[in-house]
Length: 261
Image 1: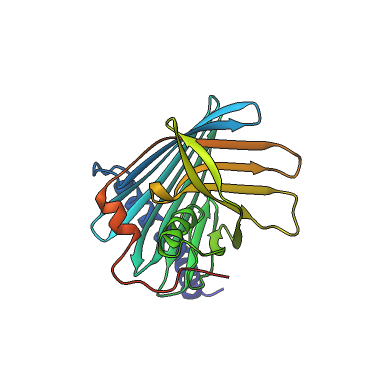
Image 2 (image 1 turned 90 degrees about the vertical axis):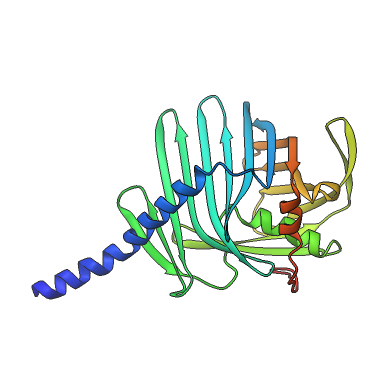
């Protein structure tokens, strides 16, 4: 194989890794921000016999935003960091980092969204690096919950929702359908909650979400059941937000809600 051809091929293979490295540096800077969060939500719950705690925050840095979610138990920790921007009511994924640590063993995954080239570059560990085609409105794995929250603010009567997000070497689409409203207790007060169920015709898994309209449709409860019957449930224990978050959820320029079925 000619030397120049080898060099060109090597350079092409390095491109996704180069983008991932730049994205990781950006995420590190964003995740060490000391700005006041637009919102903070804290949860407690169970996964099987394990007790878990989870914290979600949203911060703004100029025109970009950082959504961070950290879940911990006595033997494991999962941290997700999503950096994104927005265009009207659409959230535009930028970089995503997933880190899991179980009994000291770490697992890292990164996604870098290259919208001009319509590519998502991913890496898992040190060797698994690649790219896939990026379609319009594709989110990262944690961003769809925030998009859902905004869509409910903009159209409280919407019945069905659909969100596509990228994973390593694949994309997934989650469909949700509104169910009957239920009452939920938070901080000793009863709230009326919108209940959404994830629809999966080919799976025994079940996921339900409870969101409170009075708290900007904050996610107040998550209940998930696996095919083998294992379940986890988390409940909102603390929630705070500021005026900037309320403005974030109701941008001046609006369009039809995102990804409506």
